[in-house]
Amino acid sequence: MKTTSLFKNVPESDIDNLIRTLQGRHITFKKDMTILSNLNNANEVGILVSGLASIIRIDYNGNRTIVSDIKKGDIFGGCFSDYMNEEMSVIADDESEVLFVEYDKLLGSNGKNNIYHVTLIENMIDILMKKINNYNKRIEVLNKRSIRDKLLEFFHMLEKEQSSSTIHLPFNYTVLADYIAVDRSAMMREIKNLKDEEIIKTDNRIITIIYR
Amino acid sequence: MKTTSLFKNVPESDIDNLIRTLQGRHITFKKDMTILSNLNNANEVGILVSGLASIIRIDYNGNRTIVSDIKKGDIFGGCFSDYMNEEMSVIADDESEVLFVEYDKLLGSNGKNNIYHVTLIENMIDILMKKINNYNKRIEVLNKRSIRDKLLEFFHMLEKEQSSSTIHLPFNYTVLADYIAVDRSAMMREIKNLKDEEIIKTDNRIITIIYR
DNA sequence: TTAAAAATATTGCAAATGCAACACAACCGT
DNA sequence: ACGGTTGTGTTGCATTTGCAATATTTTTAA
Image (tube, rainbow over all chains, first blue to last red):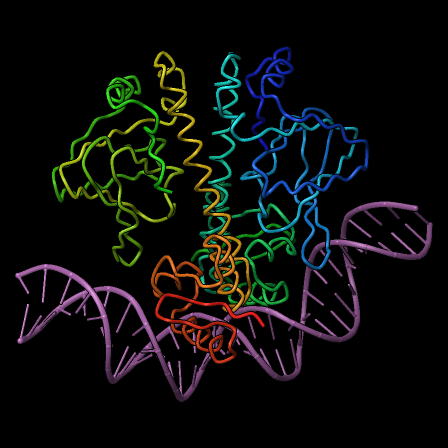
C-alpha cells in the first residue's frame, strides 16, 4: 500500500509547483508534535510533503497503536485510512510538512492546468487499487467461519504470493490474530492443532504447508 | 457502488469515440449467453457498453449466486470484483456489448488524446473510493469477535447512514448472515436475544435500536 | 547492561457458535 | 391454483471460541 508514492513519475523539480496548484492548507509539524485531526470524517486528505510521520490509532479505551509510517508523497486520511471508525492522530517523527487538500481539489479542475495533474490522478488510482486488493484479501480471510479456515486461507494466499509452500509471515502472531480478527490464544491453540495434525510445520514465523 | 457510471459527465455523443480510443476487445453477448472469463486474474476489466447483464459467482461447490446486475457504463472484473477468489461468469440478460480493456490502456497514454480521458479516470476514482468505503464498513463489522457485536456495529452504521434509530435493512436476513460471515441460525438466535433483552425491536426488516 | 515492555506459549472453563434438521411462510412462475 | 423455490424461525448438541490468568522468552529503550 505504500509502494506507490502519490508523486511517482513527477519530476522532483515539478512537485512544488504541482502542490501549489492543489491549493491546500500547509501545516508544518515539529518533531513529536501531535495533531489530532479528524481526518476520517473530513472531506480532505493529508499528503506528506516532507519529513517523516506516523499515524496513531486511538481506540475507545485510549490505547494507542501505530497504524503506519508515512513518508514523503504518502497520502492518508479519508478513504486512504484503514480504520475508519477510530480516532487518528498524526505524529511527526521529524519536522514534517503536511498538505491538507480537499478531495474535490485533488480531483477537480484546480489542478488541470498543471501537466502532472493526470499523473497525480493515475498514481491515486494505483494506490486505491492496491488498497482494494489488500481489502479483498482480508475480507476473503474474514469471511471464513472458523479460525482454522481463516488461517489456512491466509496461508494459501501467502503461498501464492510467495510462490512457495514455505512461507514467511508478513507480521507477528499478535498482529496476525488481529488481522484475522480472533483471540490470540485461540489462534495459537489452532496453530498448535494444525502442527499436531501435521498440516503445517512452523519455525518461528516461517511456516510450511504440508501436502501428501 | 453502482451509483456512478464510468461514463458520467461524458456526453452521450462522445462515448463511442472515447471507447474507440481505449482499444479493447469488443464482444457481443446474445441474451442468456454465458461467457466464462477469468476476469479476476486477468489484467483487464470489462465495461458494459450496451445492454444488461448479471455477474454470477460460482463457488467451489458449483453453487451459483447473482453477485450484481450490470448496466450501461458499469465496470467489472479485476479490482472491481467483489469475490476475488471465486470464478465469475457474465450472463447477458439482454443482447449486450462488453468492452474488455487492459488496465494499462484504461489509465495509460492511449486515451490521452481524448479530452474525456480525464473524466473517465476521475469517474474511476469515484467508483474505487465508493468501493473502498464499502469495504471499510464491512471490515469494521467483520472485525468484531461476536455475532452480537457484529450486528450492533452494523446496525449503528445504518443508524448513522439513515439518520434514525429506526433503520431498515438493505438486504434480507440470509444475505445479512453472509455479510457478517456467520451462521444464519446463530444470527437469528442472537437477534432474538437482542429482542428479549430489549436492546432492539424488529418488525420484519425494520429494526429499532432502543436507548434508555 | 539492565529493567521494562512486548510477544509467545499454554490452560481451564464458561459461553458462543456452527451444524443439521425441521416446520412454516412468502413469493414466483406457469 | 399449484408446486417449487427461497426466506424465516427455532432447537439440540457437539465443538469452537473467547476470556482470564499466568509463565516464559524476546525485544526495546534508557
